[in-house]
Length: 386
Image 1 (cartoon, rainbow, N blue to C red):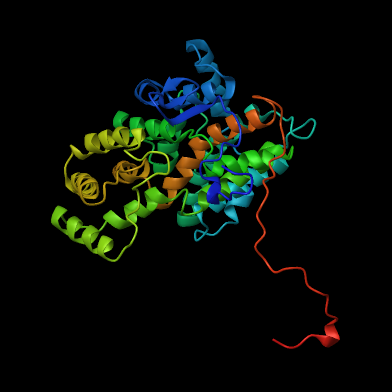
Image 2: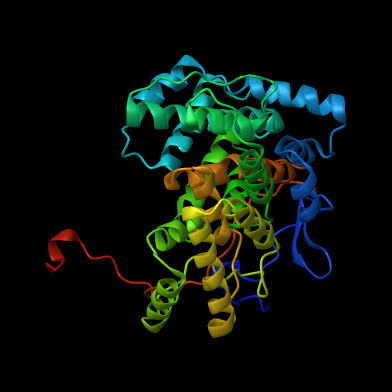
């Protein structure tokens, strides 16, 4: 790459070193701090993965128990946060709700110490549980006028607590539903220098606080070209009545040169390793028949059709849609679950940017100017009307 070459989207540009994850590297696949995503998804609670990303190691039994108890206590929301949530209308975008939770917590429980040297790991461990409680509390209050009880039981991990607060029916969620939510949190936790992570690192490089850096990540993830693809997939497939209708719809979209959401990835040209795990979860849920089986069958047929016609493969979001729907997660809450998980990855990178993997240097790329040449200033009395 020449000195003056412009790489739109920073495509192919290596901006820094990272020890957090490998993404799409030959023979390594997707790993978090050296551990294969397939092993973590199959064997770990999300809290173990969060500990790995924040505290650099997988915890032993007693450490995990203490960590889960700590995170459970942070599901309790300060009065100021609850008051703010009750002011937000049901028409609010759920990502805006989480951004608000982050901002209000930053005022109520601010980081202390020098600029850029706050307790990032501690703030992350406060935010993830607060996001779970916050989105569920807002959802019930804004839609049904119900003030739910916040689940702070140390016996419940984040996946269980989310399902209990979302459903608010006093029942224990089924193991397979807990597995789906827990595994999804593991799969969405971290993914190198994606747009939202890079946004978080840019803010962190200025020595701002962790809350501001995470707000930047939420803002980036809110954009439809980054987050929200799983919601778009669900909107596409939810009303398709049959496999034959699915083929007709996709062929029509392709003929009109429209994008099929949930397919393609800048790094994974031959398939996203997380997709197979989500597909397996969706298939397991579909064994119950009914609408779930139809959604899975439609999704599987679209997957095969896209491979045949376009040589394109699903990314992590495609089968996440049918899996989340079968568990009963409202479509607008798909991406907020992404935020709960990815906060751990954002904060792992914020720690690196602060000096955890080489010295911090403010991120400030250059541009190649292509505007007007230098012009003479014209006083306002001599300017023509447009």
